[in-house]
Length: 612
Image 1: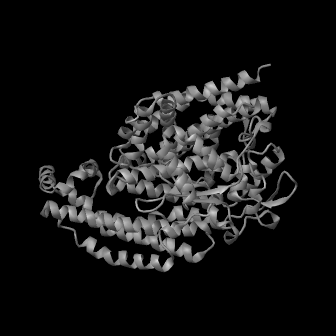
Image 2: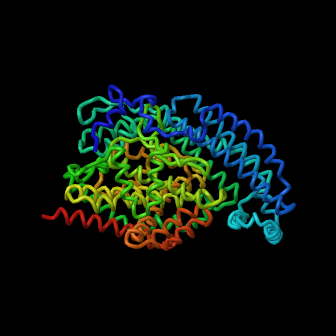
């Protein structure tokens, strides 16, 4: 370990460094996409000029198999170019959200994306106008269309929800406005939000950032946890009515589009693109609700081990065994992860190694940089990773998580044609969570110190708690607010606070004391609430990843290849079918029940180790 290396990412006074002072090897390389902005501008102009040609293809699809294939090729070629433009602009903007020129270019790329959607909005309607037997004849006449069997099936699955071409064009044109609430939240949350200062463990006054807040909430210093918690939520609470109105606008947007496309609910509309039955979503909430006593058992364990009575919400992230805490600096974490991923075979490990050294990853926090972490890539770009490394063990798991996404992108793009080279979120989170589970397994196998083992077991409990139970709570919150929107209700800060506090008490149980003024405000800071029923997939994916990782770790090459087949499949199948390639059925309650059982077993292990 290199404990002093992280200090080089902070300026005097504890503020994050300006970006030009961060070492180049810790920064991603968008220049692998475009050498500079003029090159980006040239492609932007060329794609913009091509859009009328895409619109002019309307009415040609039924003419011949060759005409249908030519239209698909033209549309997909344009979309590939659009993806490159979007990713480059997003990466450059996220490096420093204070740079207005880059924010403007990101906005221009988003506008171009809407223009592209308008230019091709007629396509699915026109395919649906072709009778199934006529489409089969076109495919038979043109061998190049054989690849698109699943593509066409997916379009026909949406027949009941696809509108006439003129109405599709209208909805596509509304796409830019539909992003409004999300853009407002992003600007506030990443550019304008000011969190003030806190006094850290060493008595220094430091600027509170979101990355530091995550770190401070895990501090053994209860005073720091409480101060960080209060300052953080007060910053959002000061604009609670504005943020509530913005979330209300976002929900109304989802409800409008669901109704316009003749879906029974916003939930059904959100799940439809991936072919996920709403029953999978409801089963998740029902299964966790039926087993919430195990969560209450965990919070009771926290209260007992930490000797905190009362146990406050700001205590929930504190580790049970702080003296067992350990961490890695970034370079050491990379080495350890290469060992942890060994069960996936040398080709997988070599790909990870190549990405680490090949300009995929933006590691450290810098002034103005977007918070959080993500993987973002396309068929024709590297699968880039954004991190905000703060020196916690959680950063290592975040890196493992995002490498899972990036290798998923890398494998899918190398084993599928462009049409199937992407993948839905539903399977994406399996790949990322699987890598976290491999990391935990490796650490538990190589750690002999009993305090560290207790720390890891507690960390594992926290992972399940945050990835399964907390995300299920978020999912239930999303469902409830969308149901209110469907009933014509207006969301207010008061109604959102009341609902969120109700769910907090339900999920975490009677052992936790919640601040009546601050705890309910957490809804106001969650960006995922703008992603349209996104978070439930973390929980379902975790259950699948638990089952798949156990098979790979206990099995042989065939089990490994079955799992890798999931990653290689991209979107060539519907996601529930894709996961079945590994022998796991998410349509059954078994995987989620297994995770709940695992959580209880981990609590048992902790209690056993604590017995005298």
